[in-house]
Image (cartoon, rainbow, N blue to C red; front, side, top):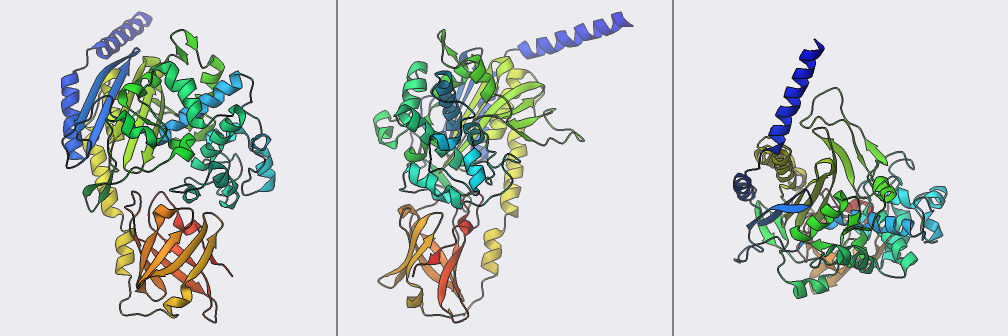
Length: 509
């Protein structure tokens, strides 16, 4: 019986090895991705696969900008957004290696003005807490503080204390861009150089990531870049690039398939580049250790045989068909991206796209399956169906429009609501008149200015002056006391990313 088990083991092992070693049909892979981009109605995508230290596949599809003919290639620049977070944790790791700080140093040691929802918690938040999203803030909560803001990083951080608590300190997970902005400011405080200068000197230059940038001022100099697109009424529309340089530590890198591939190769070589150890084994293990664990349903099967899932420091961690998976995604105005590695197989996939309806997940899975030699599915069709159903079932805006009551009038004169308002989160907001047009203006967020028209009763519809990638329809409702004295107003802007309802502006006396 033991001999039979050994024979079965040898046969199974040999079969799996042979299957995994079969050469990948890159022409078929390329054809699949080309169809995928068309099916998803995506302006452009650039996809790269790294295997055993080399970029072995690149696929580039669509056009850099709708209405133009230029096509992307492996050097085309896209905003990689939150994939930048792993660069932040790597730089922190380098500073730990140099003895300039420690993972468990208190944030207030470096930024005395740092504060969150509770005084005791503020005193005890560590650098490791920042990087693992376990401080107690809700996912995306408070992002209106920094989004399209003219504030400095320090000014943004000083407003974090107004973000509401979502769960107890270190007792949950809330993906927080604000905490990575804070980590970037610690890097600048310790080194005397900006986050951008640090990433350029410590990572881009040594790795030869010569096209990667952290400032839009360099975009035209580099050239060959994709334009961002928003999705409106089932169509793509070009929108402007948005400057994230001041908050670059949370999502400011603009890069290409060729450059991100160098980053993946470096990481899968455990922080060693050309025999130069930039990240020690301790650092590599620290950032790839789950510091915040997510529940996995062990009572039912999943597509990947997944047993664990969590967040390290700047990286998402899980298993994929029995192999450790290290990954992250990024969302920038009009661009969605993903970076995924299977370190045990020296395999990595990068997917860069310039649209907000993006197949980063199916593209990643399809590439991984082919290079791992496992049975795959038509992930593109599966996820496209899911996304389309999500859009069809998202009736938030439609419901609000149906609830509008026609032929009503405000309870107070329009001139009565004009004046200055203040939100602890985002600062000063004003309602004013320009000619006959009622205007909404954010003092520190000029790109969020809008015109207002009467909706019903004391509610006004928002018409944004600039194209907004993540939200469209919205209203404000004027609040009054029992004597119809204006107290402030509330926002209602249905979307999944920026929570205007947190602002709660009050009238300035």
